[in-house]
Image (tube, rainbow, N blue to C red; front, side, top):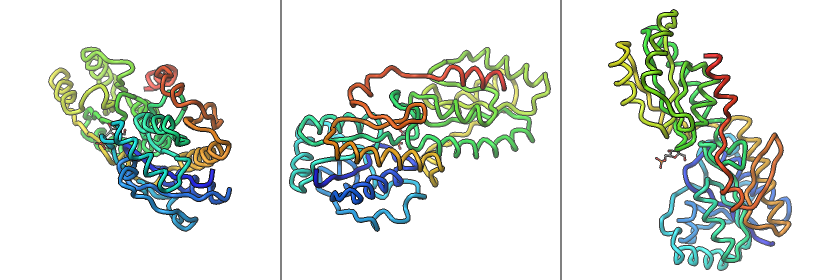
Length: 318
Ligand code: F6P
């Protein structure tokens, strides 16, 4: 292994820059050449490849987004697109590739490995929806962004004695809602993993009001529905003023937290170690505080996990 490359793909996540930095600096430390590929697989197919030095990744550990830019590419999903990508990698004499992204990006990396390129995937997504790892890069920062918003919304909902429904990202995974709901003291957390009953939710809101609750904060994961529609129903049924807030892409930005920077640094380091050892088609993650790596197919076929205990605690403390 002489030359490796790194790219970011799919939705960006805070901490991706810290991961790029770790890959670049570890590679240089091990006397490997390292290249940066711009705009994910789409940039790869267009040969948007630049050499990286230590200075290329200076002053980025604290920055959100990705200095390499990111994209979602339809063309790369075709056999022709992937063959083009491999030819480009061979032209640049790149024999190892680190892909930072989510499950779609990992599937792409797996296909490239079948065509003779050593690939390692790092989980970079705010959604925390990859079952093989306890945490993904960007999740902790996103949860803290949501928490900050909840703290502010709590002030105004208390003053007006309103119900506040906050819709958060996560695709089909409810982890952002679950973690920020528990940490933010939400009265209700609505997740795709658990479902909910409208009547029961409204009865709970009315009962809480009777007991003297000044506000009612509901965390709603985007994978189960929209905040606007639910707010209208809740207001109609309960008669209590209800406001909807969709936090949207604010959750994808911002300076990464300490946890995300450390996770990204550990993952980036392991990715280069694996390539150096001649490994391919593997993904890096964390389990019980330890960095792990496993086969991409195995990682992607793991059953969805849900922390029932956290959910139980959140409701017991609400
Ligand atoms: O996967 C990250 C994510 O932010 C999801 O939580 C969200 O559903 C989606 O990406 C939004 O995608 P886009 O940035 O393309 O609108």
